[in-house]
Image (cartoon, rainbow, N blue to C red; front, side, top):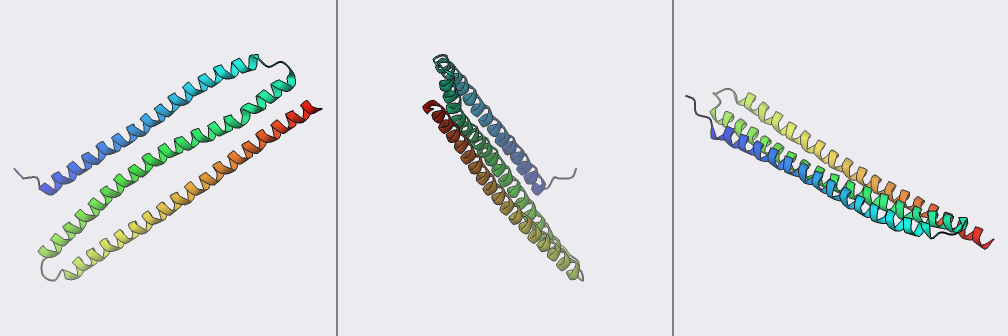
Length: 191
């Protein structure tokens, strides 16, 4: 019976550990999203109850308009805060998954390099150029991976920056709209 090399067993153990870590990361992210949504639902129900009580105390159309416009800005702020929380959770899970993948790739690269080194030590005479070509190809592949990885990280940073800028612009627009509605309602009351 052939003995299984320790290297293969170590690789399988590492792969299994990564799979378990990946599942744990995904489940933790899902758990955070569920927790966030439960908190949002509870807060929304409490807020609806409170706003309903306030709505019953409205006496005239101008007061109703002021009440309605007073709900716009906090609603927009809450929607943006919720979106930010969801984004933070997803970004955290993605970051952890990327870290796990990079660890796996680094381990794979190391094992390939060790295998090539073993091959070069045991290569028959006259195969030096083939071994050199193999080592050069491996170095080129590793360099290409590093370049792609760096470009992907930079693209993710730019996307996050753009998302934050868009969220800030949306928040400003919602705030400006709520302020304009409030001023309009005050102007009607004064008239």
